[in-house]
Amino acid sequence: MSALPAGNAAARVAGDPGVDLSDVQGNILRGYRKKRVRHLTAQVIDAGQARAWIAAIVGPDRSLAPEITDAAHWGQQPPEVCFNLGITFTGLQALGLPASTTESFPEAYREGMAARATKVGDWDRSAPAYWQPWFQSADAVHFIVSLHADTAALLDAFEKSLTSGLAARAFRVCGRNDGAFFNGDEVHFGYRDNISQPRFANISPPGKYDDQPTAPLGTVLLGYPTALEQLTWTLPNPPVLGRNGAFNAFRVLEQDVVAFEQYLDSAAAQLLDSPLADELLPTGQIGDGSPAARLAAMREVVAAKMLGRWRNGTPLALSPRDPDQRVSDTDFDYIDDPAGLRCPIGSHTRRVNPRNARIVQRVANHTRRLIRRGIPYGPPYDHAHPDANAGAERGLLGSFICADLSAQFEAIQYDWINLGLQDPRITGSNDPMLGANEGDAGWFDVPTAKGTIRLRGVPRLVRTRGGAYTFLPGISALRWIGSHGG
Image (tube, rainbow, N blue to C red; front, side):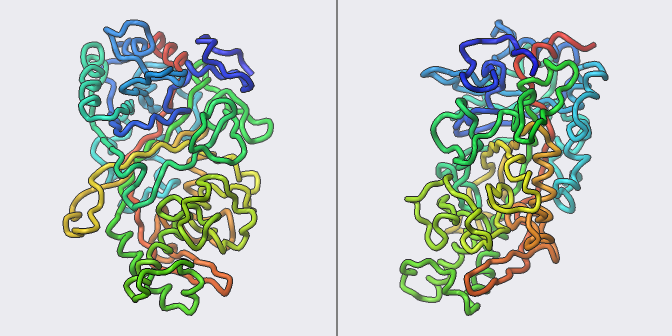
């Protein structure tokens, strides 16, 4: 392993492979927990000025540019606005970095998200031709600048400061994607989100981190051991450019809540017509026991089976018949549920994170972990006035952070979400929540102790509206970029 980069020695964490948190962008290992986010899509207009701006955001002079947020401990007063920078492959080229450097990056990153759309299920109405305008010309997307704050006023003021002076000569903002939390951690489909993340030894603070085995730093950071034996992802040339950096699949994902609610109605009616209905209905009293109450209860069963959790966050693996919030959010496994009687094998959470369950590629159980950062965008769905929802776009602004886009993000999207290759019993079906469902692939099995019910006609609920593969360089790497090229 190469030597540690220069940085704040106090930020190093005892017992890990020597990570210097002051050399890591903060949004990789920290969940900021701010109420709002703004992602600015930007294009370099002057390579020299852009490199000077990058040097300034990691330099000491705040009159030149705001300071990028790193992962070092903030003490009692966290920043009001957290600021991070992702650079696309064409962004590296636009900065004037030498070809010997840019071509040393992995193929998936070099080709970009739009060029690899079919590998992640972005076809039909999710194809790049239907993306938001600022994402349609993929080669012109150079930076994704991410700002997190608690108020829109803070975001506005920071953006004005960020894009003035030196920045105004360096790049232009082509698009904005704003998001905001509502009802705590709820997303538009009505589920609690942001529950479970990988944890890293001596780094992850107490809180809602996954109780699975500790993830090696190489899961997300370049330059460290991975979960794959004797494998460390290759650093670009020179190594300082890669170490303590990570890749991000940034995605704008529209969520069709109207179609989701309609599907819950039809699927619940199908299950109630089945002789196995009583095997699925919650064990507690179902309202007044009327048909309407039974339908309402079964709708929540369908929602839970599709996701793998009840909408309040309770995992089916621990509480398959009731949304019992007294159980753990994260301390569970699927290894003792081989038939999927508690949590269906095809459910979203089990597909994307099989934990210790038996799957076809056993080596992949824990090697495809991602850090997920997501905030909703658009107005919350108004259940009381369905007509008021017409024409409004709503969804999720998602960052899927990893050390290798192909082996982690794309493998999950292609193998697990859209083909079901982890288990022959779901192969040929797509993820009921996130999958590219259409035609014969839109089916979902609901197992019970007395038989399995197959739900058909699962609609496509999530449509991609834009995105980019970016690299989140370490602080030392940003200093290198700021002093090279041309």
